[in-house]
Image (cartoon, helix red, strand yellow):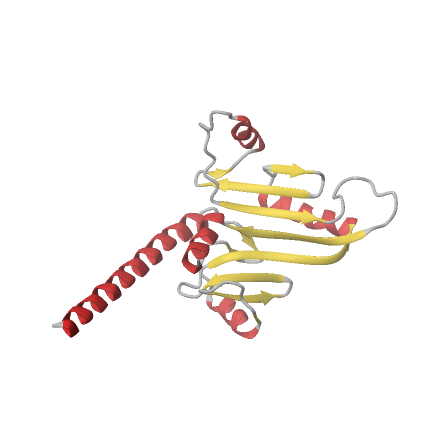
Length: 200
């Protein structure tokens, strides 16, 4: 009898684990598809989308150490890509440029403007931030209104972001030549939260 109870408990525990896993996969897949529709793309890689055959070949040939469980990471030239093990969908994209001068920083920022148009926020001439909800990109006016809404009635529902950060000022005229690191990262906080909750 005791063996039967233990066995039954084990089966129930396994069933709950499997159902939870299925629920996790289904919810994550819905989120990936929502993000994919935003079409946030760099060098042919789209946030939330599945890697194609050529991209999977690149992943196999250029692996990097992944920081989070359930993900794998690789490099395509200067672009780093993090993807989900189960679905091959893209979780995060980023590029880092070390010791860039101001012109190189301006060129990168100009490229990002061409890709994503006007940003949602620019701060201290060193940080540029684009944000999207399900309906599309959030404008600077929408962002400011939400920030100033003391009753918290305005909810932005940010689904994905592009953040560019530079060590040196992007537009200000430099008194003397200087260099610094600059990077951008394209990701979805809701997707990252899924992985954080899963691994906690």
